[in-house]
Length: 291
Length: 291
Image (cartoon, rainbow over all chains, first blue to last red; front, side, top):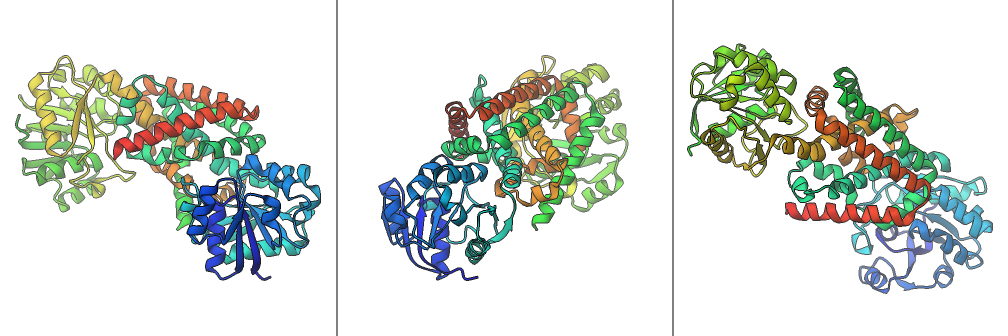
């Protein structure tokens, strides 16, 4: 399956969209890259950086003549984007996306542009930094990173294979799973940790004397809370998009923390040690697995 | 106030105790360093590394002729150590410690060796790594790090000044606060984050298909969970020692997470955005403060 793309349209030219554009350009796999978005300054920067060749603010114009359309808009803007794509997408063009939750994006497509479902291969590159915007994008972002595709029953297998080949050409390791499984896995490994980091920092910031508290935070605190510097709007969208998986998981975690608080207050050393040993073993196994 | 120490006795020659020994040796402030502990291999390693000059497993022998005794044993071993010090500590010798909770250590001293309270200046160097043992110690560990002293009403101000001077000679920035305030600040900035990291990793490790879940964890997860690789026995001791401050704080956090879970399930974007924005602002301010 060839990864060559004649004309690539990137809707939402930020870190994720810009990095895909850069990677495919670096691999010599695209003839032309069209950017689409709302912010003129960001799109001008994308041109200045050589990430895109031209841009328009109009989705229908942007996808004219496209072979592949990459949706990298915030989750909260997906439905409207699908609605605009409806009737504008050229015959034969494929659509994929980079959204961090997949159930909501598939639902948006189903509601706003059901006839596109066969050509929309949902995807999620598990990559990113705390930075935003095309200025943060780079061609190597996806090298050695995982990309999850969640193919739909409506998808042509050849369309899935093509999207897979495109991500592999960017150096990514591609896996496939169901939409629901993706959303559960990501709730556990990404969305839940972000809630804990945001929630912890918010709680401490609301304590009296919070300046003093932060002053005595040690090195581990900096690492632990790094993800609390992530984009609040993006995370609001992710929470809402994946609320079906995330809400119950966060509530379950809260129950665990109440249980742990009770063990601590009861000075139940045996139970505490069992929890900490299990966690350390799992964490060390996980890090060994990354080596 | 001179930071010179004739004979230093370090009880518990690990990362914290070994690093103080190395720092004072490097500063040319000690004549002799005596190590004391249970593990022969670790103490032999401490001699081989030049961290201590000699060792004994007997606390009373170890403190004979000492000018300063540094207690760097686990919190769970403090009371027994104070009991052994009773009657053995030479007149004029000072005692300080490196425990991560202060209320419990002071209580242990009060219970096991009340006549030593005047010469025991409780302290806590906010430094450390996920590694243990004397092999992980280094002279620069305390440079630029904060050390909190929690002087007691019984302490001679000159004793407090001397312990302060010793830490400052190691490059640390010394602050003083009450025992209770220390324990609250540390519960918030260190003990609570460790509970979240241990609890999250433990919860995920108990899910079905946890290998797969960890496989899709992104870069942020690694940073977020680093502290879950910390020593389980040490953390059991810290939890129990600081349960008065930590238990209620963790329960309050669980309540916050339940509230957040409810907001997510209700797709309350406005409330979510407010939380995430407040957290991001506080976290960015904190990091700016470190620069």
